[in-house]
Length: 151
Image 1: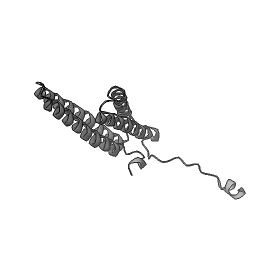
Image 2: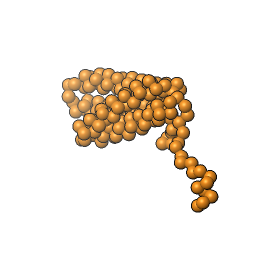
Image 3: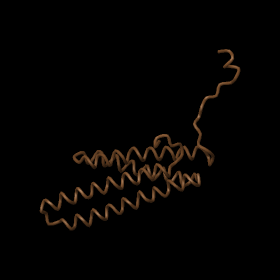
Image 4: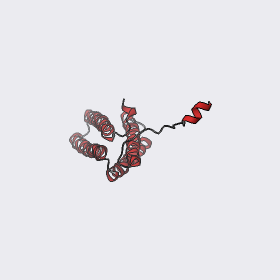
């Protein structure tokens, strides 16, 4: 169902929001637990930084979620363009993180999900722009009746 979406940027942004928020929570929790069990003196500092990072990530993807629904409901060209720009930033961050953090499996998974979901949502937003406020329809080649009779 999810990959058959034609213009539902809101639903795609919801999938992105839930999956990346959950993955970042798991990543932050595992990093915090591993740092605190090592016995380093920076356990509380790591907990505070993990919470702040999680809040920033959640607010960012929450804003993208709202922009996705706004672009879908209003079929606004400007909102869709802003969504494409924001998803482009998510794509670049995911690409950078994927090339930088190859040692951690969860970080690699987060990066791949960021890259795939940002391309997917940007594609849906582009389809909204190309529809110019109308319905997004698949393009089928319609053969004329004359060519069917000759075949």
